[in-house]
Length: 338
Image 1 (cartoon, rainbow, N blue to C red):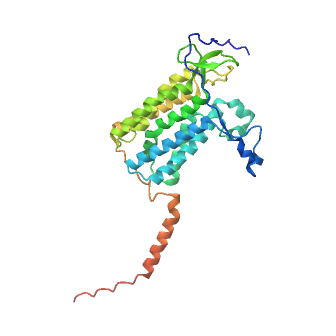
Image 2: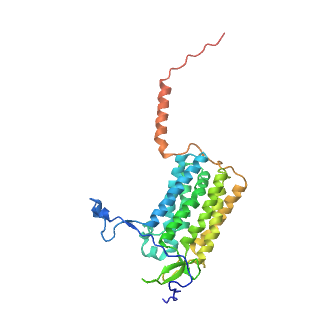
Image 3: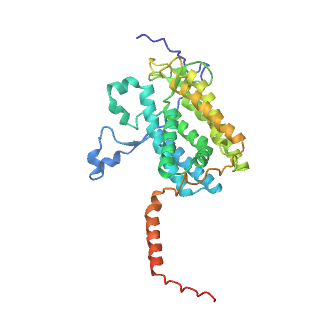
């Protein structure tokens, strides 16, 4: 297959101004000297701490801390909040890989179906969103709890966590865009010399564009922590969908030398998903416009909620109550006045 010649610039010539920054990995070669553990390590490929993983993990941690603090302000159960976050994050990572594998690398899945199980190899943002929705719905079904108040709190902290997640993408430049000589293109190196080509870096752009949204969410929460139910979910969806839809037109196409994204009907999988995300956001904004209180829907769906940590304790308390009732002396019956 023949490829078009890249736009090449010589250092010092006008064009892209953003440097290509690589954050080195931190090798953990010393682990091969640890008894037993060292036998499992390949000296040629020792484990390392990767910038992408660190930044993504940091985003998850910071988002969870902020969401838990917001839950406390809204007087939600913090233990249920932590449990909900775990379900959403775990399902989000699984969904992120499945969506990436099926829609962005279908040929690879066809050749090696076990690739679906390699959760560390490739993530998709919209796959993560879909997985998070499945995780939230599963938590609702299993715990028998209403989820909208918890979703609102998570989404109020999501933009801040997303800044760190996209910073991880930018650190490894894993979302290359089309070649460009625009000033905001990134100087992708060519060969071992000082030459470079200008290319859009979508992970970097999305990281930078999310910062104002994260600041806006923080200010909105500080001014009024009790905004109507659906406000943060609707605002997040309607803010992200059009920006992501526009940015994906800058992505590299499939079949190029850097490996671009496939198109379905002229659009990327994420662009098609943007329509659904926008519709979801408008639905929740309409809910917020009706002024549904932020604590509406808190509580079990029907009967007592199912919380794993409380099951054993509840059984013990019930047994103690029965024993106490059996041992308590019966009060004497009062005689009627005649």
